[in-house]
Amino acid sequence: MPILPAEPDCYPPDLWEEAASIPVKDEAAWWCLHTKPRQEKATARELRKQGVVYYLPQVLRESRTPQGRRIQSIVPLFAGYLFFHGDASDRLLALRGNRLVNVLEVADQDGLVRDLRQVHQMLNSGLPVSPEPMMPIGATVRIVTGPLTGITGTVIRRGNRDQFVAVVQFLGRGATVDLEDWQVEQVTP
Image (cartoon, rainbow, N blue to C red; front, side, top):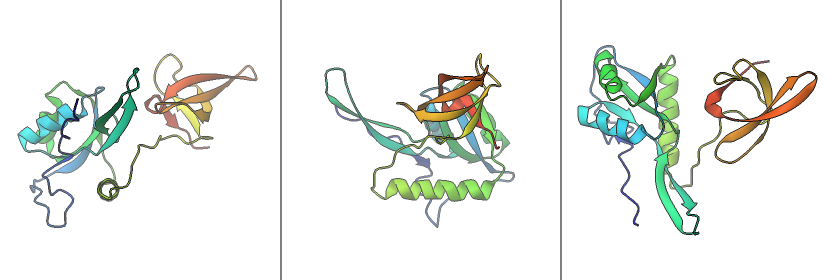
């Protein structure tokens, strides 16, 4: 089966060019949309239909079927997240689709724009780009969701698919639990 064409990664298409045609709105800001699983592209499609400025960085992922056939997919670089620029009415448009978990407010607008420009430049370089897990080995983390909420531990190694194992100290011993990045927050010592 041929690879499907990629969804546009941004709207308007010239978003990151110097002479970009971003609509100027009062009270407009960048927001981060945390989507339900596998809803990033559908959310971007809806935003594009409404004429809302967005950025969804995407990468090519290669995998194999159980029979050994190679498959290529275009997937979001940051699974579960996309960014949009708009005002309160645009935010309401984004919320209407029942595809979101949360809308995250961005405190450092200039920093986010700088970071997104760098990601865009990396993706357009032609070099292979892959997502990097958020919590490095050795980081102290606190579990923020699930039955182990509140327990702290240390990341000791990484498994496949952005999972990692955290050490949880109790009774003077350790135990390991497979967790994903979104289930923990980094704790500063």
